[in-house]
Amino acid sequence: MFYKLKFHTIFRQLDNIGYLIYQRLPFDVDRVVDDIGAVFLSNLDYSPVSIKDISKKLIFLFSDVSIQEIEEDLQNFFDDLVNEGFLHSGKSYEECLQKKDNFDYSVSQTEALKSLSYDKTGNRFSTQEYLENLFAQKPKLFKCQIEITNKCNERCIHCYIPHGFKIHTIDESIFYKTLDELGQLGIVSLGISGGEPMLHPNFRDFIIAVKKINVNITILTNLTLLTDEHIELFKNSRVTIIPSLYSLNEAHHDYITQLPGSCKKTIEGILRLRDNNIPVQINCPLMKTNQMDYLELIKWAKNLNILVKTDDCIIARSDRSTDNLENRIDLADISTIVDNLLEQNEVFKKVISADDYEDQCKKLFNDEHGKWCGVGITCCSIDAEGNVCPCPSWADYNCGNLKNNSLINIWQNAEKFKYIRSLTKKDFIKCNTCEDKAFCAVCMAKNANESPTKSPLDVSDYCCKLAHINRLSIERWRKKNVPGYKSYHK
Picture 1: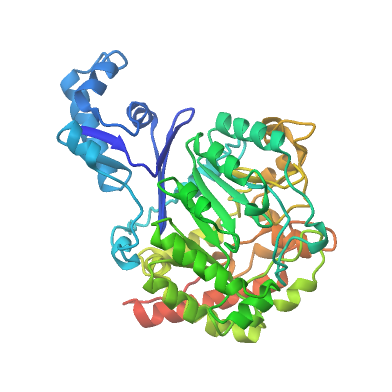
Picture 2: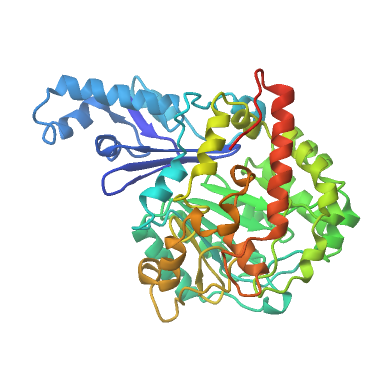
């Protein structure tokens, strides 16, 4: 038998484990393997390799077992990973070589979701939760987002970047130096963002350089500047485009962006990307202007086999000005929206209908030592001025600048990173006894941006109320759809 990594699978060998991620829409799949599995996988790449050839190498590492036992263990292990979607296999080199991993819009979301299953034994433990605990004291950077410019041709009314700040473009030398360090750190996913990233004069060269370090690439853009050259740049690569589209109603979308004609250009860009089989996931923050439009957008996109990600909680600006929060949907209107979004989310419905869901809720409620977020532990961001921050939205929590320091040193040693790494759920006092704790995802950036003292522990009241609405929505859905439903009890 011959095996190879799928094109969209990234493997990293760490100290005593291995990490696999298959980052492809409509959902990512990842997992951790033990030290033996990591050794096995370290012998694979994107060209077919035979079990026999790998076994001949490994016999020197595992001298106490026969080569036949090694071959059997390898094949069983690799076959499991084929079934989980990480590898391709074939009985011959040619058969394995011919298997492709090209993105295909002809595969519906419904069909793709059939391969997504959940362990219902009561012992589920997410890979990200495992990694955040594993690297809590010894952080490992897996994901990074670089804002290559904060200049933008739109002036979105909800944007967390203050419009007066949108004058900076990352220095070319800093970008390439940082990219080299990210390669050394072994990241698996790199986001390229703005502002509007296509405004950077070196955008094309930057993307070409990122492709060389074997990572999954996401590009956050409004697509109004998309050209044929960009299309060719994105084809047949590990690139996913995340455009912001707020409504199919041109007046509503263009009011949000403050750029006439932007709705039409963004939709045209999405359709051009789809015609060229380039993965697209639409980002649609919800606010007063588009709160009646989201279902139409989701259904339109679903017919095209395109995912839409929504967010019903606009974040305050990174300078802590809060005028943009006037666009938040009134809490009185949120409940119906949350119910509708739940009904549209097939992945989430699988999660909340699992047999052990109540046990998972209780576990989350009693979890005092876990983390609310992986920022500073497995992910960070870099802004257009070279500042290293926990995430793009938390830009004024500056942990260091790349003009006078290295990313590796900032990531490993910055006191501000050490502080947020030290925080556990019990430090968020307001959350400790909250009955909605299991239905919330506390965001330190949202807290800090709304707090007069900039404290990430100062929990946003609006987010608390959203968590309560989420809980009631989930319980209503489970009561209607899950046989033997029991109400959640802490």
